[in-house]
Length: 386
Image 1 (spheres, rainbow, N blue to C red):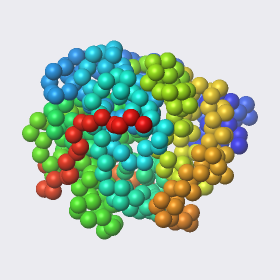
Image 2 (cartoon, helix red, strand yellow; image 1 turned 90 degrees about the vertical axis):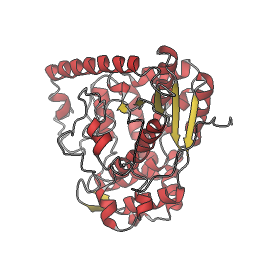
Image 3 (cartoon, rainbow, N blue to C red; image 1 turned 120 degrees about the horizontal axis):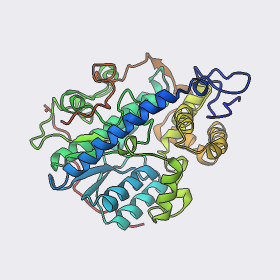
């Protein structure tokens, strides 16, 4: 399919509008003044982050908590916080749908860095039920958006709860620039979101498919009590200069991953993402992650040379359910679903909690800032070596 000669976005992405020179509208309208303004905003975020990293020391059992998925960004973030900043870090993993290669990275990194590691293993039955429901009742932006932005608040909420229980002042997530959707977070979740907002997706409540015990998995500060207060939730890669290739190189160079293969985001991603991408490719004609990575390429934060090969390779594997794309069939079997059940059935925003579209929709400001209890999280523990 036709792709932009600079950022590799395809003509099937809405708004791409390739011209006769194979240049997309986003590249044609790239504005140096806007880039300068974004760099000024990044520098302000970096100043705020550095102050937060100074202020967090000694305020709790740990200085900060890092959600650890086993991907390159969360692994390298552990290194920077422990080795470069000298912080006492607690790594935290919600054990759902993490592939073996990412578990290998997790074990290797927490061992090499001598970092305490808490693992929370929630009900797999609940998660399978949740994924089935979401995939058969997608909102109009498709499977990746629907599942990711219901799934992510679950493990983000897990991290906030554990930090609050232990009096940890900062949660530091390894989101790269462009993650998550800027309407949810850009550098920082707003204090109002963490202190005052029920994160339960409205369409799940309205569906009648989930009982109160199941809905209690979602973070809700109006239902729960946190006597030690609540943490700030920041994304350091939104403040530091970022290069995808540099992060991959450093994780390998530092021995935090076993091989270059283990630093590849295509290989360490959640297996269910292959099914989500398959659904969206069929519904929309393009990979839903393409706009995100094309933006990184335009900003010089990802390699055009690498993704020129990976984009078509990933789509080929998904469409033909081969190699890593076999996860499409395996996830369908795990969930007990057929392809015909992958359906867009709800309007845009059906699952978005009230904070999206509200007065604090963009959370890049630099502000500092409880009825049914949720099951307790696991205590810090070491992941057994493989």
